[in-house]
Image (cartoon, rainbow, N blue to C red):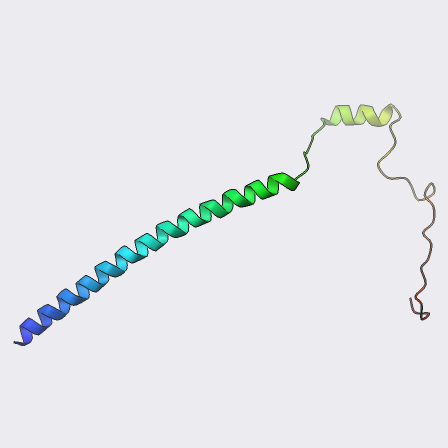
Length: 92
């Protein structure tokens, strides 16, 4: 009698483990599909607000600078001094 209960218990346990395994496989596939959709949506969203990026070879960039193109930043001597903004209550 005890052997029959043990066999029945093992069969029930095996059935539950198989059902759990199948359910976890289904959930894993659904998660993979959801992640792929989220990645595709994110890539589409990013492509709408990214600016194009252009690369210029170094020799062409150097020739632009020597031909008199304005430097990217002005030196301190050429720039206007910053105006100091005062706090309304006298604090800095």
